[in-house]
Image 1: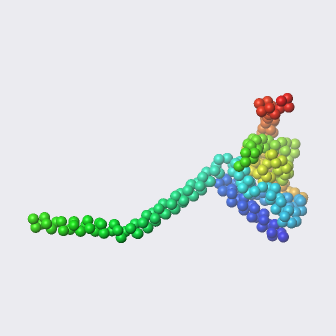
Image 2: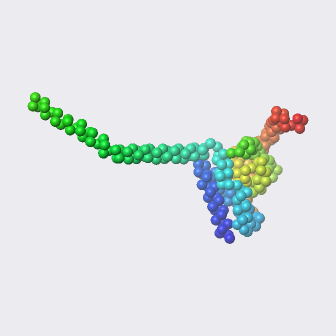
Length: 138
Length: 114
């Protein structure tokens, strides 16, 4: 039982921590310490025995998303920059993938139709060689 | 998201912190007490955990001070109290709020006289 409770709390705190990327490191640590102290105090002072009671404490605290959103808002505009960078890298990766796709498609088309246009340059080179010959004889 | 929740968020912004300051005006309280009390008011808080980042900002801006105190019944508690500048900020808010509220009531038609 005790390990189950600890697992639930550890997983919850981990979920919060993951969403705090971009927050100044001291504020990040402070918030996690405050939440851990809150949960520990609730468990000790109210003698919470079951996992269900611990989950109720977590539900009252709120979703990791809501807590992280509040933390980012209180920290000001700074945490929004890393988020935009992440978005831009996603956009860049998506754009890169599209370019690779187009290039591959282009190669496929050329490979398929190469049997047709390939002889054409050969034929233009061919008359270029015999061309000097008549000027020598003349 | 929903218009109702964004309205609540907008109204909360700028007022919730003074509710926190008022809670520790006469005596120091520890985190669990403060967030439990505010968490009971659905108009004010989206969840108890969202108060902790606010407590952090109020401490960093010098309106609150905090200290860890040993507890007889559990782990150490972090107590919060008003600083001198925090007390002045709360007094300033009180006078601003009364005239602000009166103006809105008069224009929106929510005053008792209306």
